[in-house]
Figure 1: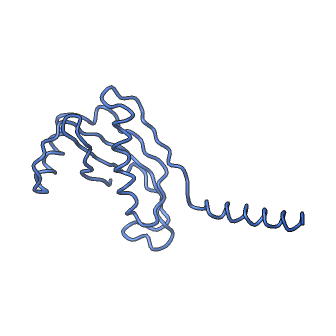
Figure 2: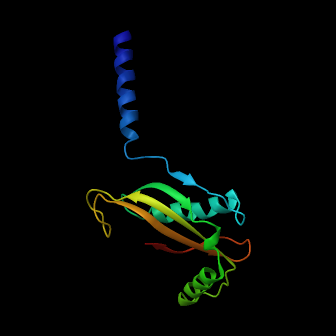
Figure 3: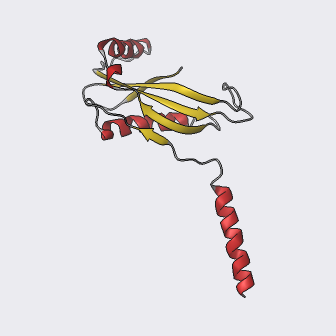
Length: 140
């Protein structure tokens, strides 16, 4: 009976370990911000992760806050220009940028180079004063 129990336990352990393959924890670096709270950033990161799910087979490794200096008049104007170009009329007063790193799949990488580590992939989001973040653009 002990042998059967040990065998079943060993099989369960092997299946558990195999089930974790390819799933890694995403490292989040919030940096230091005088503009945004961790909650503000988490709301933006949630949108990034949701969009990243469409990156078929890619594995997200890290997301890093781009810094308060990215929320400047020039970038807010750019976000508003993007909003107008998409025939939307919201006026943004804040923007935030994150960088990410991820790895593309070895096969069937779609528009990505197969088996490549992408670093410094930028994610730009904007919002009206303390409103909800809107993912505006991403890429290099």
